[in-house]
Length: 219
Length: 68
Image 1 (cartoon, rainbow over the protein chains, first blue to last red):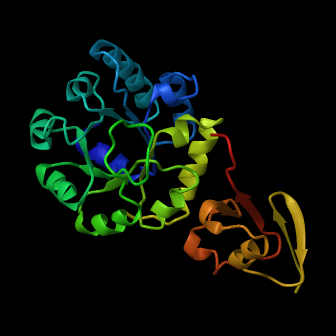
Image 2 (cartoon, rainbow over the protein chains, first blue to last red; image 1 turned 180 degrees about the horizontal axis):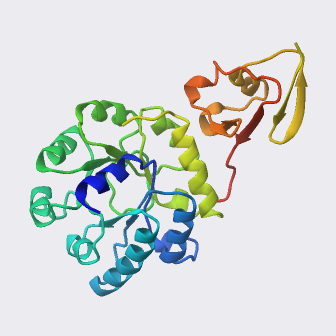
């Protein structure tokens, strides 16, 4: 896929599963991947903070094969070298990772996503060449250590009107509170445990997709 | 005019039509956290009050409870 095709597919994204093997109730990342693909997810982010480069690369390669077979976007967290090496579709960068303009120069064809926590960071990311920004953490979350104070769902409608690129939302979003982010206009919702800890991941992904769709389409 | 429709696979009869939103209210179901399939199409939240149930409609209310 070229960049244009990748971005076109990104437009279809609703639920955005993010992996975390340690929080998957004993299931491997590959099992989780299979299930989210079956559920109809259009994207998955491989995010493992504690793997060695070699293990991360091996895992990313297996993810690439499965995602490519099903026309699912593969985004690699943090590691642009791995994203390029396995021909992933994109890389997701935090505020402490490689600067976006540097990543953009290295990888002109990749989707570049950026974690942002306020309007200024979101605008800076867009200006620097990000293809989407994540706004978060929306709620208190257990999947990240030393996490910034959570922002609350209202931040979504405060930031999003100022953006011309798509945005995702993440951080502590689960079945009990997802409607609060959807009410603020979120169309793309990233989740770790709301998906990885479901008894039936495939059914959970399907349900979440449909729930997001039921709040209407748009950017 | 009386109508007959299915709600989650169960046949229901009413003396007259009712909007999906009003039906949910009767059932004390919060529409924010469920998916409503109306004749196999996902209904958008904004449409719930405008869609009135017709004879032979199929309505599925999908809730996700528990399970992590």
